[in-house]
Image 1 (cartoon, rainbow, N blue to C red):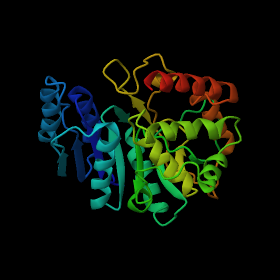
Image 2 (cartoon, rainbow, N blue to C red):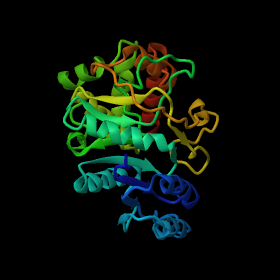
Image 3 (cartoon, one colour):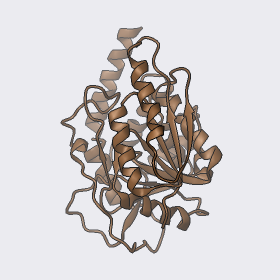
Length: 306
């Protein structure tokens, strides 16, 4: 099965971008979209690294249509990625999205190709991820499960799903929005944690795009196909990262595994609440006490700025 179209989003890390391209060389997609944000005005030394990332399009040495979107100015982590994904799904009905720090096992592309076709017209399935944050000894009956979390360290989706993305994040205090968040998990503090995260994006305290994508999926009662094995490694942890600066984080130790085929599909589309509650507690570290601690820190920060 051939690879779906792929969008590769880069910025100023040519070494990491080249590592992703080395994996794509094994997969040999027929259509590759390369998006790169513009350099920041206050960092003149960054222009050469951005140019180096863009120059990597010349290293695509397999039969492939290459399309580029290079921003003249810096849009940032939120709007730059949104612009790239909008562009991608403006041209493709479905495909895979990788950022420059995600090394995916080649089996992820076969996994995505099969599920993009299988769930093409199933509105409740909104994404496919390469990430699995479960304990390595977790036993699964099927090749993947359905999760409320659309982890974006390597993911795939459809134009129909991305069309539901609300760039403004809507009204977080609306009863329907709160209900959509609350029903994802019974973990204490879940609703408060996520409302605070979404609000931080709205108010500009967090420069990221993926929380809005999570909210869009929840408002649509959408689920993500999550493989039984983790299929990616994030090579972006370090001081030069925007968000993944803590290299001691447990997520930094994830390794990319291969998923065996043929796939064994779940018989029904239903959220795996046990798996999702584990991620809420262990990965997002959500509980009532930690929520109040975070709220207190955020309140102090806002008072200092006022």
